[in-house]
Amino acid sequence: MALYVYKFGGTSVGSVERIKAVAEKVKAAHDAGNQIVVVVSAMSGETNRLIALAKEMQAQPTERELDVVISTGEQVTVALLSMALNNIGCAACSYTGGQVKILTDSSHTKARILRIDEHNMRADLDNSKVVVVAGFQGVDEQGNITTLGRGGSDTTAVALAAALTADECHIYTDVDGVYTTDPRVEPKARRLDKITFEEMLEMASQGSKVLQIRSVEFAGKYNVPLRVLSSFTEGAGTLITYEESEVESALISGIAFNRDEAKLTISGVPDRPGIASKILGPIADANIEVDMIIQNIADDATTDFTFTVHRNDYQRAKTALELTCTELAAKKVTGDDGIVKVSIVGVGMRSHAGIANTMFQALAKEGINIRMISTSEIKISVVVDEKYLELAVRTLHAAFKLDQA
Ligand code: ADP
Ligand code: ASP
Ligand code: MG
Image (tube, rainbow, N blue to C red):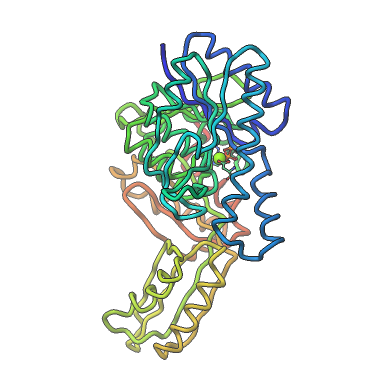
C-alpha cells in the first residue's frame, strides 16, 4: 500500500463538474489500494475575488482579517470534494488547516509552516478514509488563521507529504508538467520528463508559477518525491529529481520570467563606505524585498545605485528612497515599473562558457535593450522593458533550441 498526497489547483476544482471529476480520479487511486491525502485550492478566480472584496472594505486590509477572508475559498472546496467522494461511495473527511493543525508562524499572508500534526489524518487513513485538506492555510500558536502566500497550496501538499513520508506528492494542474517555458507565452515549449530540484528551485524563484517556490524548497529539504501532472489528461508529467546525473544535461533547461518587477535608481550618491546600507536599510525596514542590485561608480566620486522590487512595493520603495536622497544629498531618484525579468536556467551552464554571450546576442538581434543583468551559477537574468517580454522569451527559447528534444 502506498501513500500519495495529491494536490489539485484552482482550475482543476473550478466547477462542480470538475470537482466530481477530481473525486473520480481520487476514488480510482484509493480503490487501487492506496492511501490518499488530497489538498485542494480554492475554485479558480476565487482568491482574487476575495482579495478584491477585502480591498473594497479597506484599501490596505488588516492582514489578520485578510487571512480570515481569503482562507474561506479553500474551505468551500474541501467540503465539496468530500461530499463528491462520499457520494460515489468513497469515504472522505475534510479538514481546514486549523483542524489538521498545520502550525505556522504569525506572518499573515506569507506565513511559514512550522509543524504539522499528523494524528487526525493518520486515524482517518487507517480507517480507509480519504483525507481532504484545505491548501494555502494554517494556524499560528494563538489560533489565528494564517495563509502561506499566493500559490501556497503547493506548499501545503509538499509539507503534508514530508510530514506523512508519502511515497510521492503529485501536483495536478492545468498543464501536463513543467515545460521549457510557460506554454502560454511560447506554444513551442516542450514538456520535460525530469528536471533537477536545483533547476526547479531557480525556475520558481525567477517567476515560473507552476510551483510555488516554498514548495520546492520544502521538497528539497525533506527529499519529497515530487511530480507535476495534468488533472485533465493521463501521463507521467514531470518528475523533480534530486540526482543531477539522472537528467541529460542540456545547456539550458528552461526560461522563466517575472512580470512583477519594478526598478528604482538613486543617482549622484556620495561614494563612501556604508552607502549601500544607508540606501537599502530603510527599504528593508519597510519590509520590502530587494531582488537585483547594481552599483556604478562615476568619475566624480559619486555612485548610481539601482535595484529592483516587487511592483506592488514600487510606490512605497520610491517614497522611502526619496527621503534617503534628501538625507544623503544625492542627485535624484528615478524609477520604472514597466519592466520584466527574463531568466535562462540550467545546471549545464556551470561547465560551459559563452552562454551569456549567446543570450545577449540573441536579444540584440531583435533590438531588445537589456537594462540590468544578474547571474548565479545556474542562471542568467536580464531586465527588459515589459513590451519585449514575449519576444524575449521566444527569442531565447529558439536561440537555445529548447523546442528541439
Ligand atoms: P494551479 O491553479 O493548478 O496551481 P497555476 O496557474 O498556479 O496552477 O500554475 C500552472 C500554470 O503555470 C500553467 O497554466 C502555466 O501557464 C504556468 N507556467 C509558468 N511557467 C511554466 C512552466 N515552465 N511549465 C509549465 N507551466 C508553467
Ligand atoms: N488559492 C490560493 C491562491 O490563489 C492558493 C493556491 O491556489 O495555491 O493563491
Ligand atoms: Mg498554483
